[in-house]
Image (tube, rainbow over all chains, first blue to last red; front, top):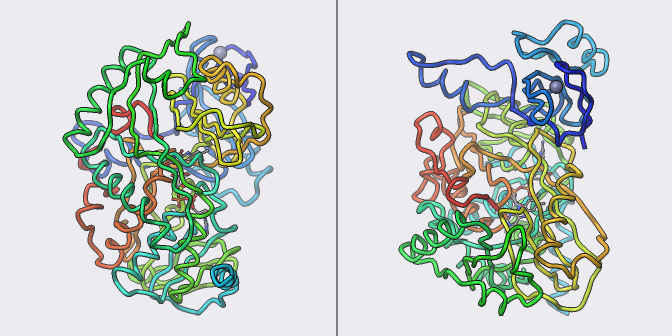
Length: 107
Length: 406
Ligand SMILES: Cc1cc2nc3c(=O)[nH]c(=O)nc-3n(C[C@H](O)[C@H](O)[C@H](O)COP(=O)(O)OP(=O)(O)OC[C@H]3O[C@@H](n4cnc5c(N)ncnc54)[C@H](O)[C@@H]3O)c2cc1C
Ligand SMILES: [Zn+2]
């Protein structure tokens, strides 16, 4: 059972209160894009073993979306941050790097 | 005695094979699908200079962790084509491999507990009839007659009927893996355990040349990636991405009791699957996690959810102690149908995306993958399952069709 803290309302709750929304920081490609770009946006996933940036929604709480860095090998949460963030905050990247020196960065 | 001796000799082969510096074909992953692929190379194409490399032990992945339900009552045309073949192959597998895979066609019952399911399963029964797959819609009275321990009254989800496939059933997962592995060994292939692809896939001019493993670099002419939940990881090493997410799926078994249920029951609305093993344990499977996960554990909420649902439908389960619980990492595609495909890297092929329901398809999938790798182009079985179907919008939407992918 994951215990997550919502950065929007500050509540800490079990995972049943939250809904996972898949990989974060995907660049949207819409009409006018190439098939390959659209496929990369819509379907192709990193699905990494290790550090994963993902979207969550506090579905049965404040209802807001947020982003989170979590480890898919250990289930450790490195931090949560607002949904309106283009790339993971430096502070969270530094925390990940200190916990996992071999981590190659979020790209 | 002779049989025992040959099984012994067969197992002695496993894991002891010295690695050669180069093989015509390397398969990563000695689960059911990888081993079956290798088996049909030898049988159908005479290719035996093959290594099947496995990071752990034989069948230590999902094949050795699944609840072994075998059925072929899918809605979409393209799936039954491979599934039905699988069922037929399954029925003769013990004889082919000279290894008892304990196939038990005890019948699979998929419960309808909502009006939507009733409509859906009636439609599936018609679709199956057109495909030549024998299934039947049965009413609540017949459900109760077949499974007397079931409470069909509800109250929350009364049993409104079921889709019944008498030829479906279960098989012994370890036996399927060992049977194929022994056959592969006996045909001269190397099944190498404790050998993990770690430091990547090497290529020359866009064509695979070698894999780097914990037992050193091994050269190959062709590469088959058949690693289920770890497909994304291997694809990253080979330089491409897949339309796949890896999540944990759990199962558990109870203490053994006297025979109480002689078919498989799947309750898809409430997420619970039940059958009784030959040892008497109740084998129970539940829902998959909703977040990416490689821990082979799975969330507690799914155990709660599954047990809650099953206790309502099978009140006698409430007295049972659970003995073991485990998880496997399943590879979920966007349309819940598998991938048997060429990849962006030359001479590299992938078979994955079987998700929560690929045990049943091991023979058919191996057959199709063997043909794809041997010829370099998909045959009639694999053609629809390309990883590029997503780009082209040709989904095989079994998640909508079946409501569940097991
Ligand atoms: C709990 C559970 C219940 C299930 N119930 C059913 C069911 O009732 N009916 C059904 O039909 N299906 C079921 N399934 C699904 C089924 O188990 C799988 O679809 C099927 O076994 C997949 O087989 P595979 O050979 O592709 O993968 P696996 O058996 O997982 O084999 C892949 C192998 O690759 C190895 N590997 C991974 N990475 C590397 C690496 N880097 N180097 C070397 N080796 C590597 C792994 O160790 C593993 O042994 C269930 C699955 C689970 C987890
Ligand atoms: Zn909140």
